[in-house]
Amino acid sequence: MKTALQFKLSQQLALTPQLQQSIRLLQLSTLELNQEIEQMLAENPLLERDDDPLGECVSISANGTLDPPLPQGLADLGGTPAETAQRNDEGDREADTDSGGSNSDGDDAPADWGHDSGSRSQNDDDDEREYPQLAGAGVSLVEHLREQLFATRLERRDRALIELLIDELDRDGMLTTSLDEFREALPAELEIDPDEVTAALKLLQSFDPPGVAARNLKECLLLQLAQTDHDDPEVMAVARAIVVDHLELLAARDFVRLRRVLQCDEDSLRQAHTLIRSLEPRPGARFGSDDAGYVVPDVIVRRTRAGWTAALNPDVMPKLRVNDMYADILRRNRGSASGNLSGPLQEARWMIKNIAQRFDTILRVSQAIVERQRGFFSHGAVAMRPLVLREIADTLDLHESTISRVTTQKYMLTPHGTFELKYFFGSHVATDTGGAASSTAIRALIKQLIGAEDARRPLSDSQIADMLGEQGIVVARRTVAKYRESLRIAPVAQRKSL
Image 1 (cartoon, one colour):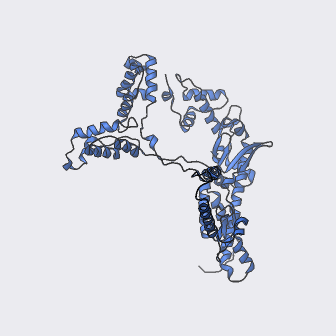
Image 2 (cartoon, rainbow, N blue to C red):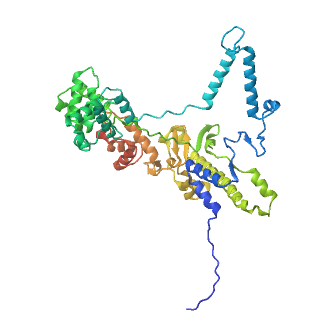
Image 3 (cartoon, rainbow, N blue to C red):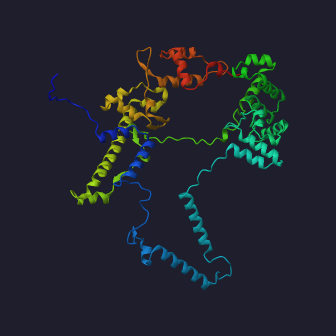
């Protein structure tokens, strides 16, 4: 085979660094975008925030002068702020010496006491407005139990046993270790008697919250029933009997069999059921330290005279700019040794341009979604129409992958709540009239039907499918079950009540 040179013309698509950055910024969430911006600000000296909270602070220049200059009132006095403060303090001391430290009436309070107190109160209010109180740290379950333990009068040995038992509790307040395993883990030279461990556990179980340190669900509920006051002893007896022997029947909501086994009337069983439902199966759950997460919307939808309109949330839009001082240096020294700054300058401009393009694309996609889902914004989820990514992509002359990046982890604030942009896209379900219904609207209809059902005779999946068919929406029973499970709604047997 002979080796030869050959020329060939071909087209090839190459992603420039600017395009790669634009694609990466487009798929970032608001939190990830802020992290990216902070990293870029730390690496690129030519990029700075236009909304810098320290931008209005007074700084000291190299020659010792203040930048920005002093206000006119302080400039008239002359000197630095420290000298001015020292001169004011000296003047105050001289005034106190001349007046003898008291007013003309001989009182210890200063002459302008009322004025000072009013101004001090006003300043205090200003401080509270400018520096809001931080949220107090929540008390954990272990700390809550130890506070109660320290308030009891116990011997040192018993106190140590209870404190060790507290350390064995899980985050729900349950004791997952058996007493035998707990005693065997202790040093043998302590000679801990089993009765001591049992007595320590009983004392711990009397602490708040009720049901703490229980070894299983049955013991947890019984401990809470023992600390519950109820007017009807028959209801308490029925509740205890259910917890001791018939929790499985209660979980299956087999009320007919429960009433026959317990030989009680329907009213007593209903009250006992309500009492058991008021108990807490996880006593330590309310002491959890998990903070709720909040979503900041990228787009806000409002009703105007022209209809529903989408607008960007100004709180999530970073305000960036190129540093004026460095940019001026580059302009005045073109072609000289300032080439080291030309690269960061170009990167800063790319960053600003790509962020602006990111928010412009989000706004365009959001407005296109609003125009096609006007029924949702006016009437709720039941009026959601089918929508796919290709429909928005064809309207905006963008690729489907771009629409997918825009709608991922971007949120829209609507009159019905805050939703991810992907929420407005749903599959098609055929109707009797030849049209299509959105899966989101079908879920909303299922939720409405179950919410209005009779608790004694809840609707089955087949009945819900028939009711949807009467409205012209053809869905199978398995589809109804899938949508119901996605809504976290229990099956018909578990929704039944007295």
